[in-house]
Image (tube, rainbow, N blue to C red; front, side):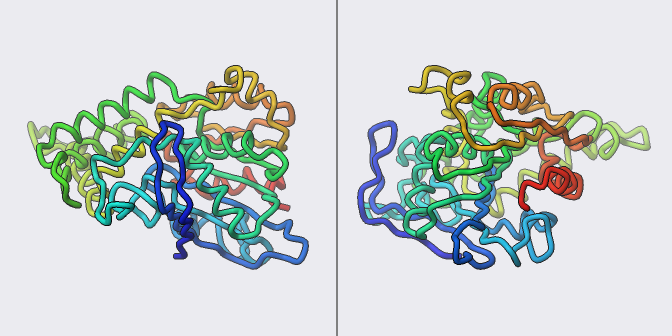
Length: 335
């Protein structure tokens, strides 16, 4: 992992600033002489910059995102806890801000990516791709830098975060805030709340079909249900690798997403996107219903829509990587 450090103050949409700005990132492959082989991957909510690990079915030598022929970049969004400036990093005061970390928006996160892009000397992004929150970043970036971004692949995302999705995030933050240790300035503050928050989130990431098949009981028990164990397991799994304050900050950033803010509304903003677009929706997605991706594709002038059929729900873009790879290969988006 590499870390870009910018000493200049980074002013946020809300008026606060971060100084210095740090953006953790990883690259794969080699930038060619024409500098026209860049693929930039935007990760989802609790992801990190190691795209070759969490998207191993798509990224690597000989994969659809071929690191033998492309220069692939993935950066950790600010507000996270995986190396970029966030609640657990030390800024200005010399100690982590935790709950005092200011609001960063999805647009702020993309502006931080742009600082990194400039520092890397990248002038063209051939293809910009990302799912869920990463897809929000893809759309925002296509609007901020239309002359830089040539092609985009937003997956399982929306143009403005919906009240339905905000409600899920709000419920997760309520779980975090209900943990009395969340207000304490320490790295492990809010762990119990994070476990509960993740359990709430998992319901929106999966589907009833998946739960009813995989977590069903084959006996007549009256307690110790598989579904309950699964929820606890998923909460503990995240708590072992993530931070409660970062989770709080990132769900707020996701809620702020609105490509139409200051641009005459989401329809006008999407119609102004000049990048060639492949929009991918998931037929079983409960959190980002397929209609949201249809709307994006219908509004963007040079766009095609493709459906990923899966029982996995919203997380299918991470779970059913082979299916997604086939869709992208058919579209020749990386050729």
